[in-house]
Length: 136
Image 1 (cartoon, rainbow, N blue to C red):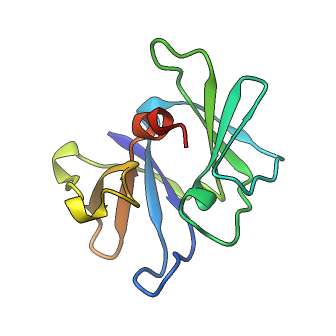
Image 2 (cartoon, rainbow, N blue to C red):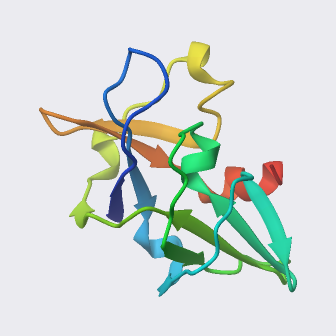
């Protein structure tokens, strides 16, 4: 499956030097330019939900000029846009290569369905449905 790869910069604390997210391209309707500034994780405007990925990950720099508009799933009428600092690339990741996250990470990382190791980086695979369900 194809994923949009987004490097999110430094993570809080010494454990990670940066966070890299994989967002399923199959669940994406389009990519848009965004002019809004958002400090909160989730805001609603004109029946549209905006989720700031830098705010979700507790990052200080929340500038996110790119929006990934998710496809509207069955039973939903509101659009959801994920705000991200940039989209670095597209990457084909075989489903069998995505590893489950340990249960100990369920709290802070509950919006991710697994991780993919490239050899030099770990890509956290976002679960957009879980993110929308939680309604942050």
